[in-house]
Image (cartoon, rainbow, N blue to C red; front, side):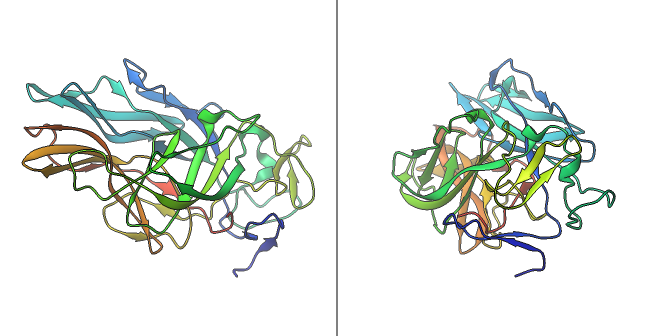
Length: 321
């Protein structure tokens, strides 16, 4: 175990190791998806110096032969902007009019060494969080046997489902797909349609919007006397480990990665172009992107090359399920 603070909640989950580098993410804003929707979103209550992350629930959309794909996102302070294009067999490539769904989170920066109390070096200063409802909390965790029809994330009383962030960890050769509501498994892409599969996955769900309730364990209060961090319900923390989606397998150290859709895959079956979204393959402690949800097919190439949306995503430590 690394040096730090060990907290065992005796709730059936693993002990929490609060060590140097701890950061606290919080929900910022979500995109309203569809045609003619805003391409940018601003975080209300953005904290200067915070790291901003975007987690998309779709990165491509095929509408009657018109294919839209997300190419990148631009982050400037608390504003996130989607950059996407669209193209059809008889329409040249141009800016897309479609906005993709996804959530935006900010990770509070490390605090300064001042004041009194418990110092966890290089960590978020929880005493400086003025709005305690920003802090993320674990509202559900468990091991799920996902059927071929998928597993819908549960509704938790008091929390806005649109503000969930869902992390997962499994050991499977299949693709994990998440559309913001349902977790699914798909077989590796080889057909010209969806190929639903089953699988077992550890799931951890976080949400913001409700202030932590102090109780037995570690509680931190801000200068106004409001609890901003409590281990009565496992807080949303990560230890500065990040993952960039890629077809190359990268070690996640046994941690959890956010579930979503991270690019457009193009492959051929029987001389037909098949379009899918990239989900996640998690196997032997490594994560990579792999084709998942089927979008459609076309006799001719619209966008003919695979496209992974460049993103930086947090990896959570193995201290939840």
